[in-house]
Image (cartoon, rainbow over the protein chains, first blue to last red):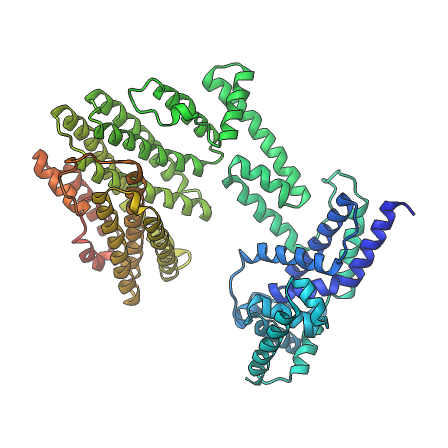
Length: 168
Length: 439
């Protein structure tokens, strides 16, 4: 297998492994399925460009993908306005796939998104990485470029806040 | 919302790409892996992609040369990058032809001049950039540097912005000369004709582009129209102060000021009529209430921007100008408060006008600070203490013994526009305390 083929294989494996993770992360931040898909696609495109032009494998693929996705989301947020639940649903906000016409799920999903949106970015990201993506504190700390202690404190604080909000 | 933590997290975990969605993206990525650098062959993507491409394309005409080349390389999807590169090459070729035609020089000289223009970021050579009327290098500044700037204006909106900027530059030149007691009647005449030409061009384009129907363009043009009027008002204040200590200088300053006053009144008349149209348009499109709130936001941001600018630069500005700038900024805030009161009372038409007026006052303060950074009054100069534009108009009237005929013209126009909009009749009382020539 040539070097190029090896790179392609590794790239597609990375896609199969991390596409959902990146998509979910983007969806939490963007609140729109199509936009989250665009960011996911663009994230992997940029990953491919990096790998194919630099010619080197990325040591921590997940971290790299998160960083690229975050930058794309930041670019996107410059144009995005704050939304209420009603605005989201009225504007055709979509979390579920089009085939699922389960409006209860849509509302539940919208509530999850909106609740997460009430957190500052880093707290939200930490919660999602810990409880939705099931990453360890150590891995989260590596990803975010922080100490494990800082991550633990943030998780503890954010979790407390989340549970209080869930109580209503 | 009561929900268990576990349920909440399970819901969040359920967010994922559907099988088909995941497969679609994978197919797309695989096809990209197989493409060579022929970037035009790009398969269609999600529905949002096309819309995003259109948004990106539409934003490009408003950016400068460097921004276009930088952005096309770094930000856009490949197909858009290719389109914009082709468009930029076409524009560049036209620009070169224009430059050759205007300057009647050979191709290598054109490229050299263009290279300088691009490298220095505007075309001005250091020697000619600060030349004043009467200097040997002044013709180079006017005929080459500024011509390059005009040719480099990629869009109509940037042409308007440049014209407005040049109005201010011409008036600043007059002020610099007046401070040095070098403003002769001949130079005053030359400067007056030049700034009138730029103001006329700006006004003409403003009127034309206001009909474009493109909201972005219309908003940009409204901003430039505001700047033009604010520039004229701020320079009016400065020129009055610069009445020199010799008769020739005094006469020269008066000549420029007379030209300025005439232009200011024309600009004000047109603005009053445009304001009426703006209100009509706002009422029929987004709704006057929403438009007023938008204008309130813009006015607030403008005041914030100028306040910060004031804090940063005020220590570099001569004392009397500090007072003037401070007073205009305070006036902007007061007018804004009045606008808020009108808004709360449901008088959206008056509120809309007030917010626009506050933006103009803030812009005037900004121009005063901007010019004041470099304009250094000599001792004893500027003996007339000016506290407001109203006072300026009255003092000039007293000084020259002239009737400000344009004021009555502005009043006539205002009355005409008020008669046309009967619904605004109740707001005319609010305009009774406004200085002459203003809304």
